[in-house]
Image 1 (tube, rainbow, N blue to C red):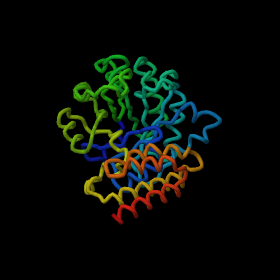
Image 2 (cartoon, rainbow, N blue to C red):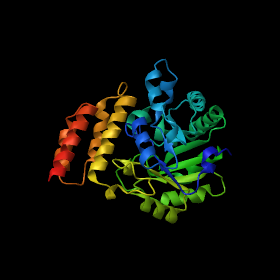
Image 3 (cartoon, rainbow, N blue to C red):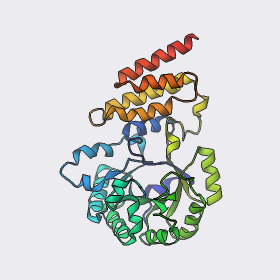
Length: 322
């Protein structure tokens, strides 16, 4: 089994999840600077799109900086040959690993027989793993998935994946139907660890992890090899830091990182992505302090990085004057 960079990491692992329109190149660069995780994942990218004539628009989602290493390219789709081609592409681009998305519950993705829809089709899922490993060459292949489709079928689903010997499986402890509407059931991660025992495949848990302390508790309870963080990273690029806690920082410093993030978005993605994507970050960074609501409302009206900087600098100046 080829576990590649995973074998160079010290257990337990703390990994950044792939999240559409969140963990783009700009945010990952900020995270790498202020609180680097053990590994990062790109946003998921369509295999079909990358194998079509218009793939240039998607290539921006596969851009990364050496500061983000080790970094894994995540793909979604339902055609084994396209996964083969995309895994080859990831190798050519210099990624450290390839991940297959078998957990996204989005209706448009599921309609393509991709994402969590693959839980219904273990034969196709296994064909995709085989093709991806062939294309990836010496890169390790991981899988991000869920505990089942409309009900938990981990006891049959996970063994199907383990037959093909992926380097790691990241288990989101909910079904496709549950999406994120119910609390993650971490007993499923413990069950996955038991099923995978002796296989050589690493098991990481995912779902409702609050912070590093919560992650360590969940590792103790389940015996998993690591944790993948998702929503906890919103507004908190210091999440993985061993020395800095966001709530210990002066508010001005936190807001200046938002300015830095916004400028990076403009520099790296401004010609490709809608500036409105940044607004979900405004909500996350700007909370929990006096005047946060009013500042958020003002920022939501901004449509340029310069505008954001002016609004925040004005707020900081007024706050300092009080």
